[in-house]
Length: 44
Image 1 (cartoon, rainbow, N blue to C red):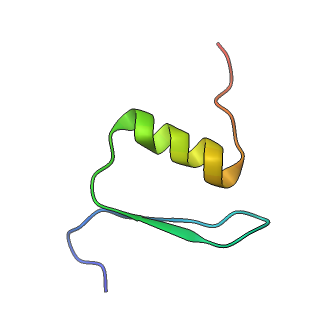
Image 2: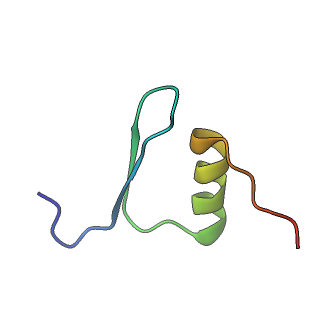
């Protein structure tokens, strides 16, 4: 199982789940959310 390595499981409504393992920079994390989950950051 997962112990001390950061792991994220992205599960989109359509498509295959994708796993990201390891520390991600903030911009990479935001891009993964936008690309995999098709969610855009709300504008302020």
